[in-house]
Length: 456
Image (tube, rainbow, N blue to C red):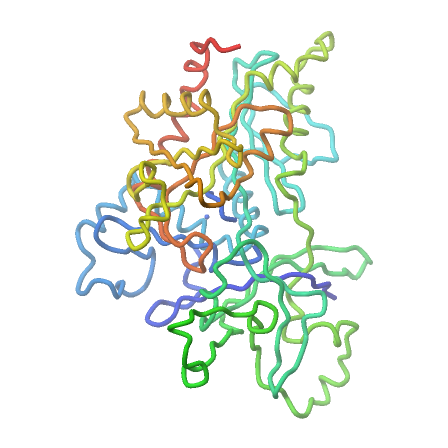
């Protein structure tokens, strides 16, 4: 028996790409229920590469170019990132895959409702709701009051979710009622093969309840656009769909007569969801505003404190801590250059973008920006800066939410990309590797850099 309240639309790759199942073998953000598998297409300087496809990319002919093979060397993490993304269809799947990789790497799984026995040198993690995860390693030379060095990202993306009553019929079609999640570029969802993924809650024979993850690896739905013959001015006036009435996926044509088996298999959800969708399911999200991370930090401090330690240990640890809010950033679009502030136009392939906003829509300050750039400078890594134009609104990230929770120093950064919140986003291959090196250097060298800083 399954309770359903959400699902994820996924866009299977069209011919001549392989079937979804061939992707079986994803950390950056944008982590929904869907957004095209959460895949980020990565661009080397002159070509597009799709990892592990059984046929060559249609953007070049003949054999795979030598530059492609060399880019897949052991020094690049792009392939590993794409493998992770291809597994991370929803935030549940992203968490499950991260859990699998952490266990394989020797991390010990903790339970929040059990007592923790933590030791210096240990590596641990826990999940909450199977949609958020906190992993941490304790230094062998840890002493009370040492700070936390944190990189945080979110696991959700703009997507379409099932409404509580999703089943509807219209003009002979079975339709699926959905609600939009996040600020998506919804016109990019039209005329694409979509599938579903999510989580189901099952009632076991013993009366207990279990959750299971679901992936439907074939196209199930489509949101068709109106033919040009019936909307002659769309190219002049622009495509402006009504998200309530026009963004309703088609599931199938209506079945006139149910079979005897279908009539006997009556479900309490029959009038709520189409039977074809009774595989996808229920959850409640854990947002950045929840105290998950700070509860963990306080608990770690308490576990490692001596019985005679003072109650100010956690407060001292926070003062020594630093948070990197790792999201994405708006790369300058060659067709819309005027949308960027003239002197802050991040480019693809040029390194991590540090994001600034005077009204703290981003949590970066002068001090945190300097410290993060110093990490890059000492490791010969490039950085860029982004400031939104004064005549345009500014988005936000989990950075200000987490920073304001306990006053932890925070820098907002991200990889430059195009088509943010589209069903298909684009970023640079080199930026993925630069980001990995920058984050790794942050863990290795931040303490020594921070000790040299004299700011009250």
